[in-house]
Image (cartoon, rainbow, N blue to C red; front, side):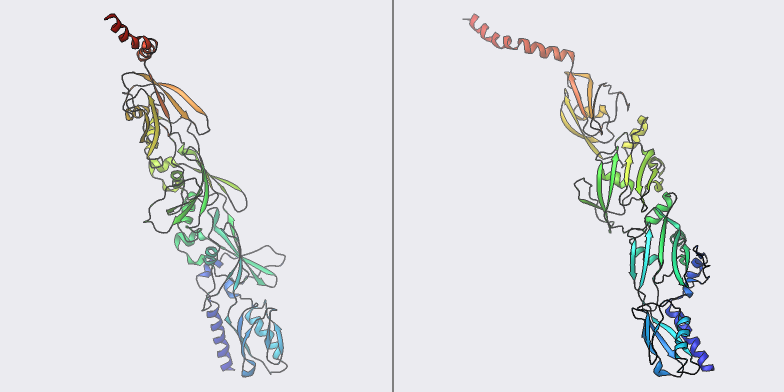
Length: 479
C-alpha cells in the first residue's frame, strides 16, 4: 500500500507539470466570477481543471497489472479502448473522474483496482475570440512540447491584435468547467503591459471563449499604450484612412509601416498606391500624407471618426495645438483601418497663430502661386508655405513701373468656389489677414497697370496707326 501511495503521488506530480500549472496565473484567477446560471458555479480555479476530450493522449496505469496499463488516445467519439473491458467515454471528465470511471470498469476483473491517469499529450486548443480584436473568430492553438498551454496574449496576437477601442481593464475569459457550469476570469491587460504583471496572462484551455469588450470612452494615453505594445494590430498591415477638411489633398490614403526606421519616407499620393514609412500611422503623419494643413486649419478641433466592432461610431476629439505649442504627444493619435480624420476651418484665427501654424511641419514646405501682370517676372513662383502676399509679389521681382499698388487676389476654395478680392499693397506692412494675408497653394495674384499706364496704352492704341505713317509723310514733304 505504501508503494502504491508513492506511485499515485508521483503520478499527480507528473500531471501537474504536464498541465503547466503556473503560479503567475493565480492572481488573475482571484477575480474569478461565475456567470449567471440557475445552478451555482463551482469555485474551482481554472488551472486545477482539465476536461478530457478527443485528441488527448493519456497514460493509464493499473497497479500491479501492467498488461492493463499503457497509453490511450481519446478518440473522436470521446472514448478510449481499454484492454479486456472495451470502450469507455471519458470526454468531459477530469483526470480524477476518469480514474474513478476506469476503476469501476475494472472492478469485476481486478480486486481493489488502483488506477492512475496522467495526461501525456494534450490535444490542440480551439478557442473563440470576439469583440475589439482585429480578426475575431475561432482559432486552433497547439500546446507546447512540455505541456505549456497557450495564454491570453498568444491568442490576441494570433487574432491580429486588439483595437484601440478595447477595454483593456476587463478582458473576459469564459470557460466550461463541467457539470453544466461556466466560470469567467477577468484580465487587466493595462496592468500587464504597463506594470509587467504577468498574473494577467491567463493560460487557456480547449473551448475557452475570450471577449474583449468596448471601452466606454477612448483614452488617448491608453491608445498610445496599446499602439507600442505587442498586443496591437500588426504595424506592417496596410490600412486605409480618409482625410478631409483643411488639407491640401483631401482623400483616401493607404498606408503600411516599414520595419526599418532607417528607410527613407515615401511621399504620399492619392493614386491608390500604398505609402510606406517607418512606424505606425498617426494623425500628424496622415496630415502630411494629405499634403499638409491649410493656413486656416483649426488644430484645436481636429476629430477622428472611428467605427468599433459593434458598429458604433465614436468621435475622438484632438487638440493638435497642444502638440504644436506645448509638445503634448498624446494628442498625436495612432490611427487604425477605417478612421476618418476631419480638420475643420478656423472661424477666428489670428495672424500670429496662422504664422505659427504655417511654420510647423504640419504645413507643406513650399507652395506654388501665380503672380501675373505688371511685375518684373510674371508667372508661377515657388515660395515657402508661410509666404504672405507682399512676399509673393517680391518673389516675382516686385512691381514694374507700370503697376498700381492695388492687386486682385483670386483663390480656389476647398468647396470648389472661387473668391476674388482687391488688396491694397503696402510693402512695409506685416502679416495681416486683410492687407497682407498668408498665401495658399495655387493662389493667383493679378497686378493691373496703373491709370497712367492704361492711359498711355490707350493713346498708343489710338495713335499707333498715325504714328506709324508719320515718318512716311515727313519723307514726302522733303521731296
